[in-house]
Figure (tube, rainbow, N blue to C red):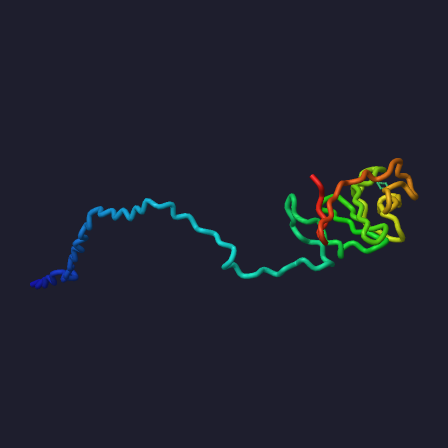
Length: 160
Ligand code: FES
């Protein structure tokens, strides 16, 4: 005698939850305001960024027409090279400002420094007068070309 007892598989009562996704339709709320709603960029509310007008680090990313330097940046009897603008500004005498191309006429290196009344090219040691850009030493064949600047108040700008 075999008594086979069958246990009906009691499967888990599956509760089918039908999430009635209430399709909320497409209610496109068009908040169309017909006014041009661009951001009125007023400068007055901006936080004052560090006013980097002091002499010293010449790292200003100045655009065209922006001041190149202030007169206080240029030492009397010397000058300062502005590599970004490829120009060197000098003050051979008090209140007299000149500017020259910072590209050496020898082989096109950028002049690097101004000392002892001359503008120095580091590549082959040419030197140029801070007064008129003329060659004072080294292999450079020609003077540094003059660059036009305007000085208004204490602000020095490239002309044109
Ligand atoms: S490139 Fe200036 S001295 Fe040669």
